[in-house]
Length: 518
Image 1 (cartoon, rainbow, N blue to C red):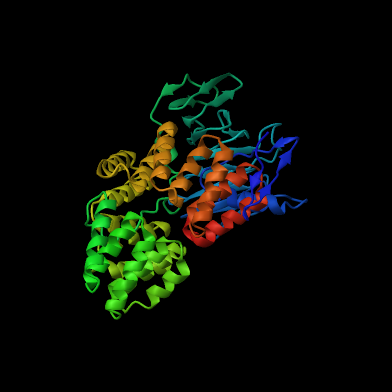
Image 2 (cartoon, rainbow, N blue to C red; image 1 turned 135 degrees about the vertical axis):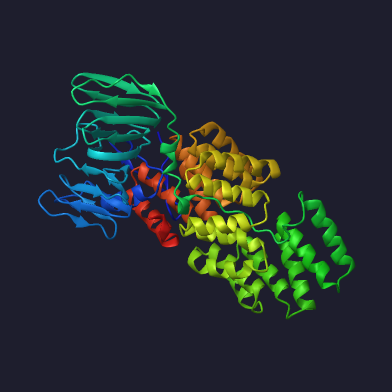
């Protein structure tokens, strides 16, 4: 028997259907769950929508079975049986059909079938023209209908492309897909492809590299990487012994403000946050009007999980780069990337460390070029390399992402951030065992890392281990309630378990923290 769900407030929520835990199809990107969870939690009895357009870019139009084309201007857009979605040359969108996530690429036309679903098939869509990507996990099934064939699957990721003459190409990235028509049937496995010409049986599967199909799930704002802050990034690792030496030097020179400040920085970076706070306060007593000690205090309080005190300390920091730095980090930790970015950009003119966190803020906002610029400007330590690996991943450049993640590991294999980047890259390459190993090492290196737990939860969800995914995601949001990607993953898991009200609450929280996820 499955474990009951862990509620948002820490309690357990039981969701049973037909005598067993109800598992819905799970898509990794959270937008799938948001629209469907909201629809399912409010489920009208009449004219119930079977899906929704949950996100879009460029030109996307929708038409009801009896209406005219209407330009999509905001989401979600509910979809009913017989509705048609059309994308322009610059358009794409993500739709949900009965809990199944489907990405519709440019120059495509798809229709929601008027007929009800076949028994046991929860998601159905007709592709008239263009290309779609489908991401499925769990035990629900999806059926894609084209002019030449049908493709049925569960627990898989695949792509369907239909040309103007009806020629259909099905490429599978994970799992297996059954492709069939009245003339024949083939089973297409991971990294295989079949082609179906109208009036002919599906061709025998051939081997292809289907890894790029997985990349569209690596949406930039939702990637859960959160590099640690360092106050003395120029000091080489390991830090504990250097921190002890610095503390001894500070104790020997209690009137030396620089000694107190240097020791505070090393203690912070080594994880001794109580000592860092004490030393930062000692430096403030020596030079009350200096900005750096107050900024160090703010950052130490923030790292210790005391955001209100950190905000107060940042506000008391004299105007200048250090105040901008501390304020930007406090805003970023609160989930306000929009306010964090300009503060960190202002600080970066004098404090190189700010570039790294400006890149994170830009990524949370979905501003890829800005994020890349700041990541490249950051010092080339393991954290910058890890962040650049994540950015390359979101851009679909698997080769660069893998190389940068390997460089980050080579620079500091014991660091959680480097292991997190390696885990994310392995996950989106479909190498789940390797991804799981890196995530475990990330958690071992930093058990208090919400981003490490979030990545581990994502991997567990991909592995269809929903109990583990739920526990990891719940721990991540408990550690950092303002970390949007962790709420996105928790909502995804709730949706997969059929707990739609809980999914809606979690995903609404994710959107509130990071609107760019949509």
